[in-house]
Length: 455
Image (cartoon, rainbow, N blue to C red; front, side, top):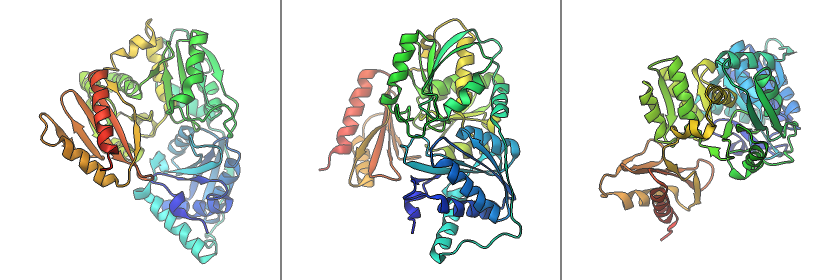
């Protein structure tokens, strides 16, 4: 029997196909999804992985057996599925394993209006239902009626909606290299960018769920090396890299240097605050100090949250925030049902760059004010004990403050670091930021020595 404890994560379902997730299990998840959401209709989409169409069809079959109609939108990015959920006001399911290797697949689920489904918002109940049916060795009883399956293409409408949210009328001609990583960016970018004054240089636009060129995970520096080289070779104005399901976007400047997602968060926040003065902007606690500074400078109210899309979306709903950003290049917009869309962030970058004459490196310089370590993982035997030892080492030092909103954050006037435990592995994740490179390196090395000191 499938081990759902290894398959059902904090925010989604993800595992090896067909060892952990197969068509029969997808059918049961479809039935449970309808039971938990109470939906009489759902929308289903999938990425380019070889197993995705069959899994999506099985999920729809299970939903129909419980009486819900299913609209299958076929190949799509995750944010295109969120668009469909929001526009059609239906619960949705996206079959993707995002940036994971080819043998993985998974399900990202949402309620109507793209509201998240996580452990505390329905995923635990879905898992319980599926486990019960597996234990009984019998499928759930058929619904009162059999739902129907229809197919609908939403790509053009998705693109039109995004373009309605950003003023691109004043963009000057730009040369942009886009690395789709053989993922869904190769499907969405041509339609979204059509008609814009862009000289588009496509890289790895062929939809191929085996990822023949590199992993579709731009968060790992080795996966943007090709893009960086091509930007320089083409003398392009910028480069964009999308992950496998194209919900995250990373930016490279004209020198081939990666732009911090915190700087992109600050840039987009400033633009959204110009449209909606005085609004709230959400940022997680390991984005740069520059983000809340820029938000305040532009008359907004920054709100700091835990890491993770469910926390961002909850705070956006609670506060009515206009925008939210994470260090991992997830960008959330009130005008996009509080859901994340890297494509909309990319359009903001293009509009900002194309609306003035300078290069991207100069444009983002005012938003990139500090030096950061990036996330550094350490394997430890006891996450709690190691974290406590680090705290003890800094207690009593002058001008040091602590908070435990998410892990341990240690702050001084000149630097801060956050130490968070992984939920799935015996790891501690360290992020350090300081006012200069030398201080950052010193604090990083001291913290790592404390974390990795087993004595």
